[in-house]
Every structure is written in C-alpha cells, then in structure tokens.
Amino acid sequence: MVLDIIDEPFVINNRSRNKFPLKIIPYVGCKAGFKEIFDTLIPRLDQNIKIVDIFGGGGAFSFYASNRFGSEKVTYNDNNPIVVNLIKSLRDDPIDLYRLYQKHFRESSIDYYYEIRKMDLGDGVQGASNFLYLAKNAFSGKIRFNSKNKFNSPMRKGSQCPRLALDSLVYLSKTIKNLTIANKDFRDFKHTQNSFLYLDPPYLNNDNGHYNGTIDLNDFNSFLRSIEKSNMVLLSEQNKPEIFSLSKSNYHVCQVLLKRSLQYFTQKQSKEIIAFNYSLND
Image: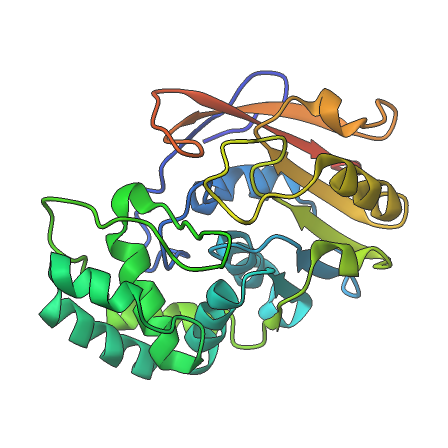
C-alpha cells in the first residue's frame, strides 16, 4: 500500500501475511493495519528521541514502534490498569500467559465466559489471562468497561474460542522486552519534551456512554497545546480536524479511508484523520 497524503489511502482490517503479526487482542480502532501509513508518516528519528504512546489501548502502535525503532526507546501508557496488566504480562511472562489461556480455551463455553467476566482481570498473569480470554471472545471485539471499570462486553455467538499461538506470543514478548509501561492519566505527560508522541485518544466528542475511557475535548486540546511546540506529534482521530484547533502553519492533515468497523458499529467505509506537526524530511 502506497500512501499519498493528497488522496485517501485505504486501510483494511489487519490481514497480515507476516508469520508473527504485531497484535495481541482485537480492539475497536486498533491500528495494527496502519503499518504502511506509519512507515510513511514517521520519519527516521534521532537516536535520543523517545517515543511515547499516550493512549496505548491494545498496544498496536507500541508494538509497531518497538519493532521498528527498538523497545528501549518506547513508552506504552494507558489509564486502564486491566489493559496495562495484560501488556506487562505479555512482556514479562508470555509462557504462563499462554498456559493459562490454554486452560480457558479448553473450558470455553457461554457459561464459562460469564463466570470469568466476574473474576479479577487486573492482577498479575492470571488476571491478564482472564482478560485476554474475554477480549478474544467478546462480541465484535469490543473491549468495553462500565463506569466501575468492570468488563461488560457480551460473548460473541456461534463461534469457537480463538486459538493462541505460543510462538507468536513469544515473538511479540521479545519485541517489547525493553518497553517502558505506564498506567497514567494522559495529562501527566504535559511536560514531556523532545519526544515523539503518538495520540490516539478514545472516542473524543462522543456521547453514547458505552465506555468509561472517554475524555473531555477541552482537556485534550489544552494538553495538545502544551506538548505540540516541544515535541513531534502524530494524532489519529475519527473527528474532523477543526475540533482540535490545529494550526494550519504547523500541521499537515490527511484522511484515511478504512474498510473496517469504526467505534461501535460496522460499515463498509469509515474515515479517520491523521495530523502531524513535523516535516517528513526530518
């Protein structure tokens, strides 16, 4: 896929032909299929520049950046401790994560799914395996939490529990072996300088109330103003760029046309924007 920032490139659901895809769970808005766009829009980075994935989610960008630039340069962050615990367990204990998932695989059923959903999801590798099982079997890949941070996605119907390949899990673990993992509010990074910041904020300007991870648009724009002058910024979002008050003299904006589900519904084509505040010749 060749990206032309004048036209609208197509991004489809991840159908990687690679033996070891850089993805662990389905995630609404997952960027695992954006590799070619990232390759085009992220230039070679100075050796001293750190990369921070502010809204890490399922980890697809952190996996990509670790694979391309080395995990010692990358920080993954998310404000949800359950998701963060999964990424930590993947990095530190992939063998046990696989072993515990296999138990879920063997026992999987509708009743079993809802029993696991009642259990702890954020404590160590056992909690991580519980969450991994739920995430892989959730309806439409919806990683959904209520206001009390309880996972509440229903189970998908009419299909078997997906298999998990040990060699893929180990490969992904090795890819992120030196990854820095944080569980902070995005605003805690407002004083970051001389870094590359990837921003894929959850569901800005959206009021359907299905997720507890929504953030205030004014808070986000204030944060963006605080970081954009002293960092390289790459922003992915489904809203029109006007809501972010991006300076036309400092930002380049392109549209991405996707052939996959976006947010909570499925459609043949949906749009996102990608904005960046640096020259591609950097």
